[in-house]
Length: 77
Image 1 (cartoon, rainbow, N blue to C red):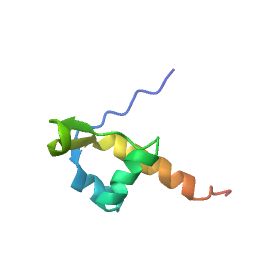
Image 2: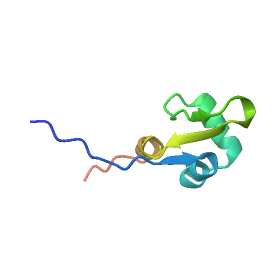
Image 3: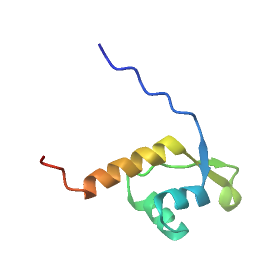
């Protein structure tokens, strides 16, 4: 029998909050968006450069967990 999916509250993060959560600056966030195919893409509210960008918090957290697991050697214990 399959495990039920964990329900997480749906929360949106603005760019500033994503930067704080991942511990990087705005230019690093822009670089991640363009170069890391696993990094979640934002949802634009508006058009052009003035659009406010939002990310799903759970997608950012999932990316963080994956990123950390790739950089931390597995425990062989």
